[in-house]
Image (cartoon, rainbow, N blue to C red; front, side):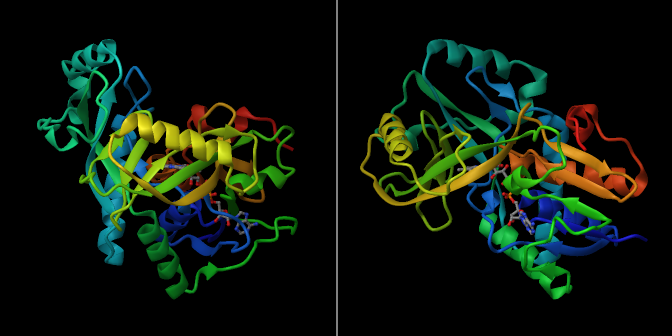
Length: 336
Ligand SMILES: Cc1cc2nc3c(=O)[nH]c(=O)nc-3n(C[C@H](O)[C@H](O)[C@H](O)COP(=O)(O)OP(=O)(O)OC[C@H]3O[C@@H](n4cnc5c(N)ncnc54)[C@H](O)[C@@H]3O)c2cc1C
């Protein structure tokens, strides 16, 4: 069996390495300590319902069960805990939104995401309700530090982790590039399809807010294992500096004040760069079939929802010659 090198230690690279390893087809995973990893900034929220009209996340019904099963399997195999099912308390700004959700609740296809228990009393006096609110079920939260740390340690014990930059200029074969925004330096594409989207999170103490649920209002407020909350996140296209930006911090504080009505203290600011794609879909498949060079990138948002499913999709393409879905296939872009 041919074994592959994976380049990148974000969620795309880790899930690809894990899937290959399950098939006895992983040689090494390279993780460059000198490059930033967006996956370690992400709050690991898995949200099945998005947008102001409450649409289902793209392919949620198919992707989420696979993703949840994969994370549970990793927890079991590595004896680590990082996956938590949760609900999202969604603040309704308008009566139309409440009516929209009520209409969704009648639909069979939305039943996995409708909560039986809609007790909003813990939020009264703490959260600015707008026109009210409701819970979205079927969401999850990943403790990203625990997951990524456990996988890195596992590959290290297997002798498969190389903690250095992979030389992308060398002549190689059997490589899967999962480099996040570092792909912007690559000459593989005639026009690079990755768009960097910078994001900020505030890390806040909100002592009077006692909840394990995610709150989604003007700001999204995500409880953390240490008792603090992540408040985010912003979207700034094109900026690739890792420096925090005061206007974005001010914007997040403004959103936070519009979402809660209790005191808070900003303890830290986190910045990451999302490797978004021009059409907002993942990018995967063969860059050079003869040399066995592949790519998995374009996880601008929802990396933690999509990566397990599409890592498996890519590995089935590589190992079992299954075709790649048109919507995510790298061949929708021109490459050299
Ligand atoms: C503020 C913010 C909040 C977010 N919140 C969420 C969220 O709640 N839920 C969610 O699902 N997603 C979230 N995201 C999006 C998520 O971070 C991305 O979807 C995901 O992390 C992209 O993963 P990736 O593996 O493609 O890239 P990255 O995580 O950036 O990983 C790229 C890796 O490649 C390595 N690398 C690059 N070049 C080389 C080389 N030559 N040799 C060796 N290694 C190399 C880097 O070191 C890095 O480890 C958020 C993003 C931001 C910025």
